[in-house]
Length: 313
Image (tube, rainbow, N blue to C red):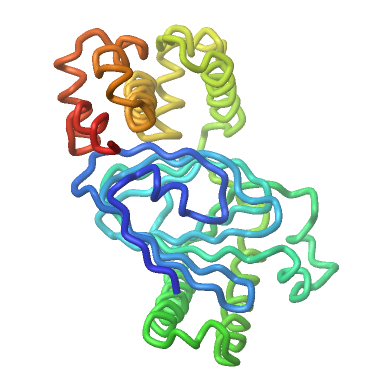
C-alpha cells in the first residue's frame, strides 16, 4: 500500500489517480493532505484525507470507471452543481467531464476500475454499459449500499496497511472480486441518472461554465473580469453568479481570485529568488494591492509569498 502525506497541495493533487484535473484550495483548516492507495487485481482503491475544502474539475480517465464516496458528515459535497446526498455515490464513466466542490476539510474514498475488468464482469447486453455514455452521475441515496462500499474499501485498506504481501496474494483477488461485484451493481443502478436540479434544466448551467472555461483557457495569463466571463457565456452577470454558485459553491469573482492565487503560488515555487522578487511576480499576475494579496495568500497557503519564493532554495 502507498501511504503519502503532503504539505504541498499541488503535489497532493498530482498524486490522485483516475482523473486528469486541476484543483484549488478552499478554506484550509490545516495544511496537510493525505492519500492512501492500494492495488487489488487491477482495481485501484484510494482514501483521501484533506485539510481543506477544494474545487476539482477535469475529466476522468478514458480507460475505466471511477466511483467516489464522501466520508465526512460535516462537509457538503457537490458534483456538477448538485449536492451529493447521504448514501449517494458519484460515478465517473470513462472520459466524463466533472466538477467536484467541497468547502471544508473532508475525507473521501474511491475505486478506479479499468474498463476491461468491467467488460469481463458485465452482461454484454446490459444497456447501462453502453459505449456512448460519457457522463458524471449520482446514484440514488442508499445508505446500505454506501455503507457496504465504505466498509469494503476501508477493510481492504486496513489489510493492505497491516500485511504488505496482501496486494499480491490470492486474498487480494478474492477481495477485488467482491468489490467489483458491488461496483458493477452501483454502476448499473445509477445508469442514466445525471446530477439534476428540480425545475432547472442542466444544459444551460453546463454550457455557461463551458463557455467561461474556454475563455479562461484562451486568455490564460490575462486579467479577466466577471463581466468578461458573462459576456463570453452570453448571459447576465446575475445568471453567471447563479451558475458558478451551483457548480463550484462560490461566485465567479471568488473563483477568479482562487485561480490567480494558485497561479501566483505555482509561479513563486518555480522562480529563482536571485532572478525575481515577490513584487515582480505579483505585478505580472495583475495584483497591485500587495499587502492585501499577501494576507489572502497566507490564509490560503499558510505562508507568505516571500516564504514560498525562498522555500525551494
